[in-house]
Image (cartoon, rainbow, N blue to C red; front, top):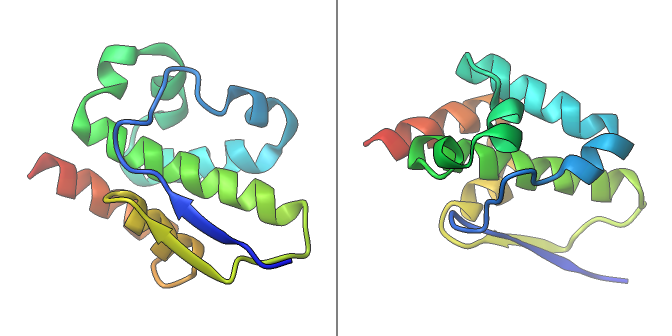
Length: 118
């Protein structure tokens, strides 16, 4: 089976996103820990506890990148299949670049945070 992945952009965030996946896949926690280490604050806690902060662009963009990448890693850990192509809507382009291996995750997290602050 062939499939493609399109990663979402800003605006699809929600408080508590990925909490079910986090309960069942340690890779979600690992991904958010790496993001938090790169950013210097607890990104997971922000996505679970503070809707107002989550909706601030400088937080939304790294949160959506981490969520999309964590979801991708869960998906690929459960199957031998790989997508034949990846794309993203707006911010989701960065997630596609990370998932494809063209951009490192920690670098991308810092990049989208800076992008959002401009």
